[in-house]
Length: 158
Image (spheres, rainbow, N blue to C red):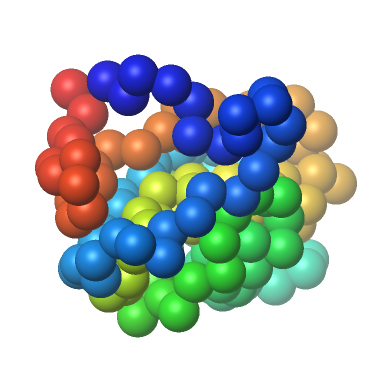
């Protein structure tokens, strides 16, 4: 556990962390989450019956794009040269879609925020595309499952 929060300077002001002295290492993060909906909504998604198009395909692309734009959304995130992003969306009958994002790079800072952003935006895209038939959808359990690389090494969620 870190002794102090890293996004504050000596005066307590928010600041971007200086990573210039850190070595470049291979870094990976995996995040997961889910969107819960009515069973009828999941059936419509699986049957390709949502009027806006291929829900899971569009959500996959949205998640990938979001990972690449994380530094534009989260104020103190570094812009990163990401090597790989995958976003997997798996129907989980009777009433959910499971979402997993993996982000990789070789660099001086980790990619946990990029993986979390990919999952979140993929889920938001599903909500947007399906809200006409189900406004009660819930985005749940978005969290980091795995992180590797850098000084702190490997993290695995329980």
